[in-house]
Length: 439
Image (cartoon, rainbow, N blue to C red):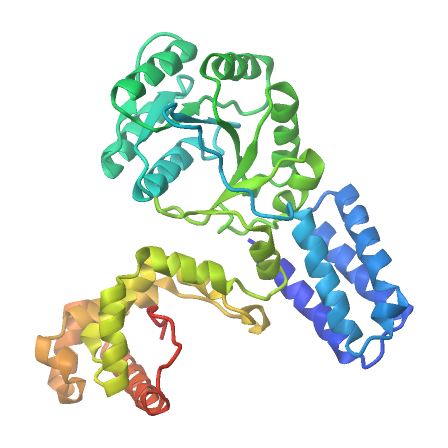
């Protein structure tokens, strides 16, 4: 979502680093570019002004301008103020004291992703040892009930859906959750295309009867400043405890995420990072600031990998790397692990410096073609690709729906990878994390 903004900041920072000495004029010029970049990213203009005032106040002192590396000092100031803009510190989600169940209530406009977010949160915390239970209280959109039931079956998590008003369903659902021994109840509610009195009256009544531990406003990042306006309205009318942004993997400019905390005073608690049911993660202001400024988010990437990577298998790969015995079957298995971490473009975006690579495009279909070619090989061919001659290449191409040139390209790339692995194995692997390597 922040790729364009990260690219703009990279250019600004490159200019700042290029000055041996920095004057007030240099700072003013840089801040004008920052202002333009933020406004083009649809950040609230009042937020931009306050942000730049803070950065300028810190940047123009003698301590910064006369330091050994003034450019780097100003970059740090921008980073720190951006962290503040995004909320400062990570705010963990709250749970009720046992034995009372935790109740999380989802509110927001229609189409923001509330129902899908219910499933994502339920799945995430079920893996963490919680006993989640979902309540389908969105009666305004019949498909929402079916959608939540489908998610429940997929995750093996119970879903309550009943008759009567939304309030009746919510109250009866809490009773059913208590009987089922649930310790986390996630309550889906109806939305509208816009904020109106009927919507507010309904969610206000549900909140009064259920007394949720947390009330989450779910916002579509693609809607820009409309999300900030809606969040403010919900906060004033019913009170919300945190924001969950969906679709941050899209091509939105990012202004809503950069404005909402400062405008509403409400922290961002989670972000949806993709369409898959496990694509949701806690929001960390410092990590997001680093990603926006092109500094990557290695900690977040490692945490993602630790959640999905088979560590025993990773250890086996490490041993094969040491002995330079990595074959095409191992490569195929790594591709499967890498897919679990998230879309490749998202993964690369978490690596430092990727914003510097101009014109970088990720062809997700190419990975599928590679997998098809490897699956069309025999066990011996995967183990010893050097035996794949012309007739074998033709068979693999036909079997995978690719051309012989595609097969040649795969084998050439893999040969280069094996050569690199042999070189790396001589240098040792001490300190390397056990992660799938995106070759």
